[in-house]
Length: 331
Length: 174
Image 1 (cartoon, rainbow over the protein chains, first blue to last red):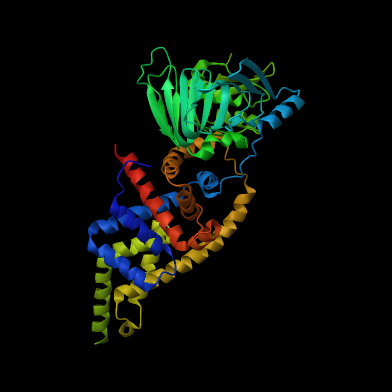
Image 2: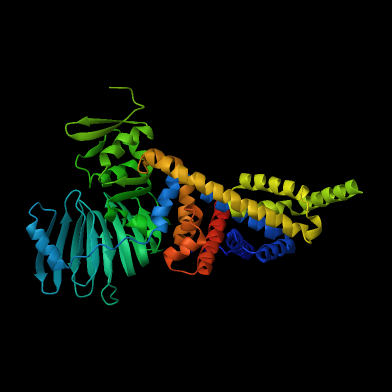
């Protein structure tokens, strides 16, 4: 919620807008509205602003409207069924392709470590022994260590979405590179691309700390549902912006959503789903920023369309898709 | 005698225009979601007022003006519906490529601020708002789909609209 105080006149103007909009609203409604506009000149002004905003939003381009309707006006899609751990394990055993394999070792009676890994283009859901649900993205790897006093999950690469069973006596901590995420009763997504980490919260709160060598103990912040925190080892601080739960978990429905992210990060994550790896040949292309959706079943057509928006060339070399800077002279 | 009555009537309408035009346009923009349509319909409403032949039966000129304008707006919405159904058939013949990067680069600036504002709202509030304002569903349709009363739908839409407006104000400040 915005911290900004809602303007009471604007609120009333918006209420009038919805009342007056009814095509068959009675004459008395119109009369009452006219009386209200006569009370104070700011009333009609606020009403005009509300009307103008509604018109502007109602006449956005069809693509934007389509996307907003898809993300906000449809009921939440049926949740994927979470496989209990045992089922996931037996499934993994059955799938010798190595899509998911679990390795576990009993270091001490009270410490259990498991490694969860997924193959390219393979998302996997499973449940940890404490009931915490994990959705693991493609080409991702987690090391889960449960001790009596703590539950540690290391994101070694890729992306995972957690619905944590809260246990005050046994904090749930996710470590991704220099970033630690401590749950305060929560569902959240962690994506690690090299040393860049993105944490997006869909429910509850988490506390996020920078463990980097140059970080001070004060480099901790709390993120709440609807917030996304990005950590870049080259930047001086973590940045916070806003995301919808639908955007955060879009990858679970085979769509990768990016909001203002460098092309290098986009391509690295796309490669977790691509049958043919994509390589960025010119490093200056990595500075380009991309916002949009990529369907994991239509990666090729997305790549083919890139030269229409970015100054780059797409070519295929030795089974790799190569993106090179079109501004450079043809070699 | 007759010409005196007519010129009195004309000056009444002129006065009505001066005093009520802004409210009339706002009323019509709300109904039609289009300022240019609102201006056209208002013109037509004044024309009808000028040529009305039942002056003595009308006790409130202002009430009558808004009634005529409201009816003209209903006609226009009806015509628009016929046209948009035709347009939908046409649009389906062109593939929608929402995942192309071209689309996103163009639309994202606008969409992002709306998205931000909507994502700060309760799910139901955002849903009712998007269905009504963005998708163009009427309140009864939204109420039925969401299993809410129309009053609640209006409440959600109003709340979202005021919230979005506040966010826009915030971003417009340099």
